[in-house]
Length: 111
Image (cartoon, rainbow, N blue to C red; front, side, top):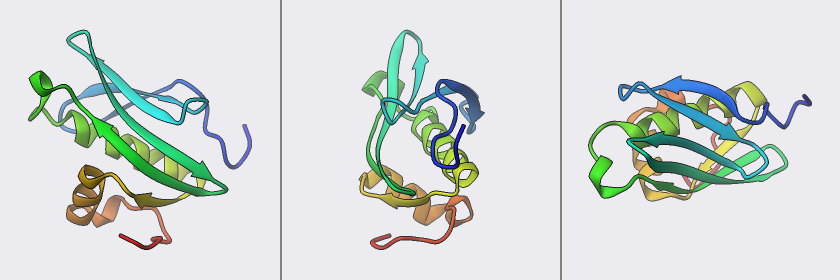
């Protein structure tokens, strides 16, 4: 493992939903399968900057803290890898504004 790429498919558990989140570094995606449905957070990686571009949870699973678990897992991986984060996804941006303690530094505008 180098300083930029975290281990692929490393299981992480995060958030109040207590869902198991997998990180697929090759696809630049965090995902969880809940009740047979895929929930995901997609990101771009340029150097050491993670840009979160999409967080998706099927409507039937909304309100269970799954998107929060995905964002928390992404922040944990970014912190471990030494990445900065740019939340382009509206959900991730709002969540991180509410939980600034999760943001690995330094912050990259716009935040």
